[in-house]
Length: 472
Image 1 (tube, helix red, strand yellow):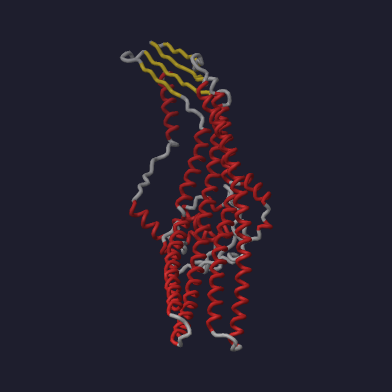
Image 2 (image 1 turned 120 degrees about the vertical axis):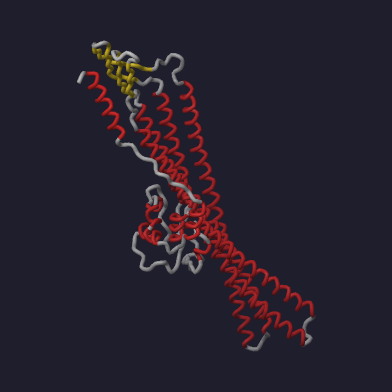
């Protein structure tokens, strides 16, 4: 075999070996009806969810399904089911794959030019690209920083999901208690109507006084209906925050041991809250990673002032003669030296720095406002509890007076109504305190109540892709 044929065979074999590592395309069609069915079939008895909970709680579950769901377990269920988490995980995967792209070395180029129609002319060359000025390293650094920013974005999305679950659960607890209070108030008002009806029959009161009590009773019934409607609405919002249908929550019981006792604001130093918000908030760390990526991008554009090199051997066959050559080629930076892309990269770096400073400033303002709001709401709750205790004492005193025969049942009924109003005021104060505590947790992006899940980070197992568990 002559040298020309040998070289052709070697080149063809090289190309064939390179093709062995190729990946194949696999179809992944989406059927709206099938996806809708899967969404509707999600429930809190899912076997994959159990595996996911045990992995993140760090211990096996004694029973399944859970008898009672609290905020940490519902949060993990939301991490498992919520579609927003899947979007964020996919975005993080895209950014991670971009690191592979950035680190890929450029492939060599093989050129083959046979003589046509003469069989005595043949030219073959192999060109190897060489990146200069450390461009590949800057590409990898930029992609890694963007991947890190995407991972913090995933953790930030997870916190937003957790915040939505907490808000929905707080509203649901408040709605249930409000419905119970409205029922109790209806019972008291119904008793008042009966007492006033008897006094009217005895000629002790006028008709308008009884009519006013009936109006209060009717308003209480309307409030009770609204309260039951609110329970259904908040239950739907809770299901949406978790990522399941409302029917998936049928028969589910909830618990929140410390719901009535939010932490004392004195245990949450404003300075500590602000420092944690500035240094540990996920969006701050995401903005910092984005700035590092912009920095690497500028370094890459500056390195691109220096052209890459193409080098490689060549072979020419001409009428029985063999010629071997060594080729070298490069782009001549005559008309521009990459000034435009460098200017754009510098501007993007300035923008990233401004975004980081703006994020920190916003975080400081949010943490200060949330801390002040929670401190005020907690004091309001403490005062509402004190007023409720005073009403409780008045009720007991009225009952004792009635048992002693020193008064009738109507004063007792009046005190019970006053106590019911105080209980409603306390519930409203508790709702505001829990909402303010949620805002304060959002300001630092970590739980502030004991027993809750640990602060989120990109390394948390709860943020991993759990497609395998879902398929089980």
